[in-house]
Every structure is written in structure tokens, then in C-alpha cells.
Image (tube, rainbow, N blue to C red):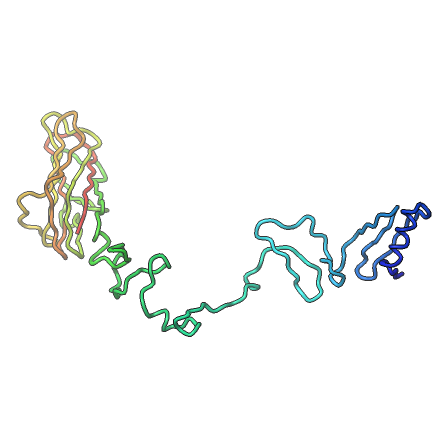
Length: 279
């Protein structure tokens, strides 16, 4: 049935308050099954008020939370709660007041995008094949390889045991008793300094492991500079050495390595070294 609740409700409420009438009963709204109950002067609802009567058409008491939003999937549908799918996000055009209110390709290619806005703050063209680094408040290409503009630490090792009276040639990721197979080539000029070495065992009394950095034409080094980095581990209790004063300069296209020499009668050991490379 359909009840004119506003008029009848006032009359029944007046009678109840006057003590003349006590009424208990219920009615069903004409929309989506909302139950309306009047009991001893108190109105109550059960079920859901439909969208057509200003409700949500749903029980949302157990929904909600972070990143949850109310949604009506179709016209007249009950409300639901969930996250916003990407398909529901509207597309939009960025505004550029200097270009008539529309962001155009011309606006993107003119000027310099600062670092604070995700740019490089640089208009210098790229040559490719180079590392990027920060310089004077901008992100630019290094003039040479990845070691340019900073210091790279390179490591090398005999990998296996160095036996007494033997010489091996080492460079990063390579070691061999033949120097032509134990050297590495540099594409750009480089300088090696601050050499530090360690051995897995001491050479022994009056014995040494000597590490000397070398450079030259790939395959055949020939004469060496007067004071290349040299590191010598000597004696029965020493397992480390360093050279922080001498440097080795390698020209672009040359090869370099480090010779590791074990004295005759020296102990068997693994010798490993690091050096700082700059350009």
C-alpha cells in the first residue's frame, strides 16, 4: 500500500503523545523494498533506500578506506565502493598560457626544462655512447667514457695461486702468463694511481711478490715509463702493499696491465690489486 506519511504521521504522533492512541505497524515503500516501521512514536527504516528516493540503493556500512571511492556504474544503478580504474580517469590537455592555453610541440622544444621539473637543464646535443653526469647544475654527457668526470675503482687478481718464480699479467677480468693475452685496451685516455694489493699468504723470509703497472702498444709494450705504480709485498709477515704516489698514463687506443712477479722460492699465493682510474 501507499501511505501519505507526512499527514498521517503527524496525526498518529499527536495521538500517541496525547496518550489517546498506541499504534504499532509497518509499511513497505514503493521503491526498492525499504521497510518503514512506526512503533510507539518512533519511525525506523530497514533495507536500503533506493537511488530514486535519494538513497544509495546499497548497504555501504562495510566499505570505504584508503583509495576507495563511491561510484555509480550506470544511470540509476545502486552505489558501489572501490578504486578508480584507469579507464575512468579523464584525459586532459596541459595548459601553457604562453602558447594560447594549449601545450604544443613548439612549447616543448623551446627553452630548457629544469632539473626540478624532470629535465636536464641542458641544451647540449648528445653524441651517444657516453655516460651522463651532473656538471654546473645540468645533466650532460661525459666527454669520454664512464670514468670521465670522476674516479673509477678497478680490480684485478691472479685468480689462481701464483707459484714461486713465475710471472703473470693481470687486468680486470683477465690473467695470463703471456702478456699479449693478459692486457686490456682503453678507448679513451686514462690514468691509474693509488694502487693497493693484498696476497692470500706472505711471500716468506726475504721473498717478494712485485706488482708493476705497464702500458704500451697492444701486443708488445716495449719500453715503460720511468716510475709506474709499483707495489711490493715482502717478508714472512707481510700480505699487503700500496703505491699512492706514482701514476700510469695510458693513451687512447693503448693497452695496459699489471705484471705480478713471484720470487724464486716464494710461497704460493693469490695476489689481488685495486687501482683508481681517472681520465
